[in-house]
Length: 390
Image 1 (tube, rainbow, N blue to C red):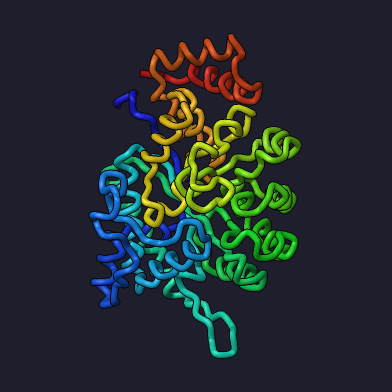
Image 2 (tube, rainbow, N blue to C red):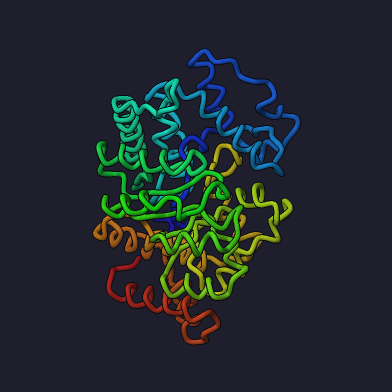
């Protein structure tokens, strides 16, 4: 094992959003679909070192332009085998960069729903089951080379309305899968209120699905408060929490983790004005909030997990120890069986070098961090004493 590598976790990636321009071209050609010339920049129009798999062309200041691009890219997916291709491509690409655990967001509405002439949603059960079989196969094939664990999150698309979100969960109730461990309300944050989805909140609880709700990215800190009220165990994005000190204390007290996506936030959050340096990730972490680093829509935003960790390190001065802490926060917040969670925590601790352990002890003794972070550091220190470390 190379102990200098930092193992990485993704808790937040929409599978359709993982499609790179290279993969989009491949899918369009495979399915005989015309590829719009305006969808992507030409190679001489962007930095090919930064965007190794091509770059989509859309107005980054307009959320609706991103949604339009997402829908066009998603339309290239025509059969379950296409989901094998994109799942394998994303997981393999990121596993090479040290990804050991990933939660993929799947949207049954995108995968297998059509709308009848009278407006009713029709769910294709066979298509959904065959799609998950292909995604499972991709996971198995990636695991032949990399030691990676994957789980699925079901997405309810909030701007389609509360009835569709509830029907999505009812569909999952009738089509369970052992890898489906989470439920997520995503889409346009300003479409409706979390109170509108009362039936879905309750059904998710009945189905024993942990909740991670998108909030506090486009909408205000109040949306995070509402998500927590309805049982969210994690918050997708949640960076607007920085506006509310009382909320920050609640996040710390309840150990609620924020799924932060630096590249995505820079592009979509108008308050940042496209300036990554205005992102509050450092303030949130320093105030004791549990955070993870994520790709969100890796293909559309031209990112990967190594890039996200590099941004945190190079722009926000996160140290190696802090990045290991962020990875451990991700596993502790993972929607996975406790036995596997314990194995993954031990796996990450095995990456701690003697220097890491010395720094850990120094940080604990000097109390230079927020008490919530010191509490985590003490936990790691105790665990390091009980397991064999190289």
